[in-house]
Image 1 (spheres, rainbow, N blue to C red):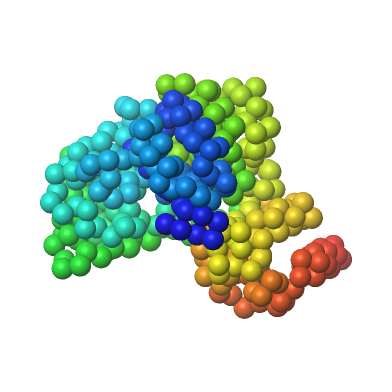
Image 2 (image 1 turned 120 degrees about the horizontal axis):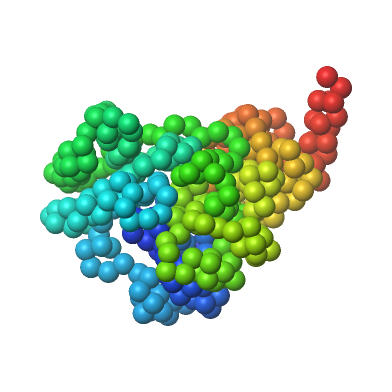
Length: 361
């Protein structure tokens, strides 16, 4: 897939977890081939942007064992929302489901965006994940939701068979369609909860972008142990020590949930998209510095009305248009603007005036 800044290469890691060795192998390839670092996606993938030589990059990634091959590449996206480790119930179900789906005829015919979520811990990110089939663990057993179908109290074996049945029914259609199981609407601000309800072992990066040096450091910290890839563009590093966190912050990780940049949402902007006319991410960072409280609450800077990074409402959404911005309060990119065609100077002036008005009440 190509964008304005070069090719995109997306890597999937089985079970939504990557070993430290895999990240260590990925780091020099990101440095060599990607101009935009490695971006964590909302489907717990790792995306290389700005790849000028995709064929050479793919060959190197295959040689490093980082590209799926065979039937594994034909399986749908399966996101596991749980702490890393092989013995977690969600991860056992994931392995069983992959094994079953590998034997389903025509599995490669599923729509490209078909998504299965296996939720072992009900974090905000997991609840907000829009998927086709959701398998969620509760005290009563497994719950399965697929479109209008909702089953509860299932054993892992029954949950597995029901998920496979849903996919087989989808494939039985002449042209398989998505089931479209909606997630709950996420909160405006950053999603702080994690698989263990602790932020100590969870790290975020600005716009989900991890630099090659940060990837190398993560690989060194984890070694052969797995690191969890979360659907809110964060990583879960079991046993992360304070000194290691400090090292990663120096390499671009967010300082924590109170870091104003944690509340920012922005697409790639004009640097990588022909639909955008503004430098969305640079502008978002500038506004976070200008008004940290606004950024913490949730600020979305979109390159156009499509809202590729997010469509849900935020306290403030900026929508790029002809080099300026339309401002939408308490809405998404398609909302009614309170200010249109504003330059960044005018945006900052508007925010300052709003802050002064709020201070008089």
